[in-house]
Image (cartoon, rainbow, N blue to C red; front, top):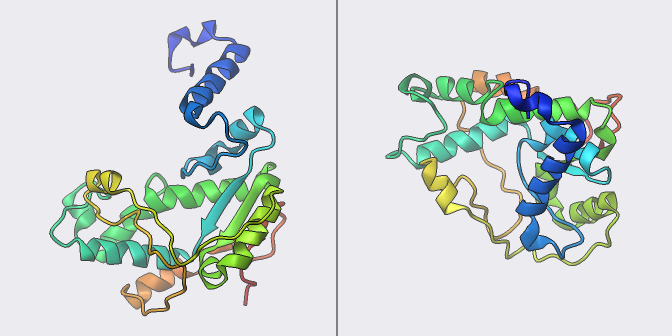
Length: 228
């Protein structure tokens, strides 16, 4: 339907809307009887104007974390899979050292850099009122209270969760990336402090990127720690 296709001139805006809506209807058909559907994708923040054009009541929830610790967690995972050549990186030069790996991941079109830029775009956009940011550390330290606030943002009644028996993993997806455990979560929601495995200069480089902790003119809601 884009201008890259010469036939796009024959597709009206009304047809474009109908076609996109039909994709959503077909994809979510197995959940057609559900009142609320949660879906996860790093693309959502970059598509916020389109989402709200199609579904004005839609909301986007983003779990945020200090970028230095995100890089640390990915690096730890890479080292745990030392016999695998992770497909998170495109070539041997990117995989070479912790410096080249974090540099690759932070690029604007890659795993961390893309998600970060998309979130920043949504956070400062005119659609930001539909956005909720949830701090990862606060979620792990106080999951019950955090989930209650999330329900409040969604306009839904809170309900009891079992934070000691959480189950989620996507082994097939992770195996295709040759990065075992990428989507595996621990069964107990808890905060586990540890020392970083990143070199000090590298940690410092990413440590100051948490823009969501600073006062802004954004209309987004946020469950985050106050800036020091």
